[in-house]
Length: 486
Image 1: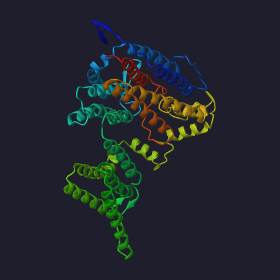
Image 2: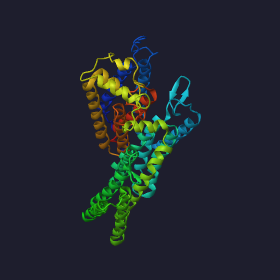
Image 3: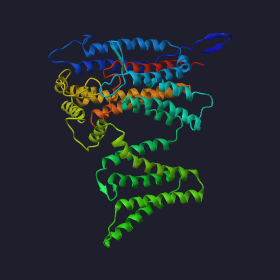
């Protein structure tokens, strides 16, 4: 709104039609691929037959277009004003779902209202994004103040806990992808690095847990050495000094060299104990550096080392006692520890066969044998990408991925050009969620990510996911339309 001479004049912005074009393109391509994935050779139905998957998706597409139109007509201030209220309503729905929902495919995440099934966890994505945007837009907000960091973390982690309780691990991980937004808004890169390091520790700890190196496993042995290297690198990066890094590496090498020399004289060496001794000496060296120079960064790196060790020691317990058996098997299959082609690995195995059989140019629309004969489970929902790979081949798959990359880059551009913190934070939240869905969905279909059950945006069958992505995107377009308003 621009106020001049007592009159109220609205500066009309333009809708980002390029993003809208991507939306229509993806929705139409998704509808066609849902039809192909659900096509029954014996009881074929038409594209517009409401009794089939494609017909049902068409109804959801029509309702999504009405929803998108309505979202563009709502005043942008409405989204910011009621962001927290909507967030609380969303949390209440998650609680209600947890209590009353029936178990479907191993999770209790669906509210059934007559003929309609809705998944509240899908709608929490835009509710969390709006709440984060409102908090960051507060006057004088600084992320790294303790109170603010706690508030932002609670907004993300509270729904994560409820969704995990519903056995929807994939959706919970989508919420955690919003850490990329925090990084954009001032979260130190060390936090992001710790998250990546935790993933590496977990993978190594599980992958090589069955191979012993003395009193510890090979996974623990490798990880202990990595922690030493990571800690030394952090000293080099944050304190801009090289000598402590070299000293850590020298101490570690000296300990292993001494152990090797002793082994030459017939003394039995436990290499696991040797790694623990090297780690302990590195910790003591950091304690010495902290007390000598009195710099907090040495203390933070010391805490990183100790925290990394404690996390490593908890990995096996969490894997064996917290994760469900089917989740354990999926991780083992992904890491190549198990084959299980008739169980947890069946989805991925059949999906890879379908994609591989498509070759360079594919078998053609409705000509995919693997999908038509229903070898691939969930082929019109979470595994829709295997239909694309089989019927349109490497070229078709590459085109779809390229379109998604351009779409995400466009969202980044839209987010960065916002004139308000509210718009920018919401824009980056939308971008993070779409990016995470794309990477994880395609990764699990081709076998390089665990199967965690999240849809490919606009392509996978389902009303809740389509509505959720539509709301997420068109609120951003409405905010962008008003970015020049004063």
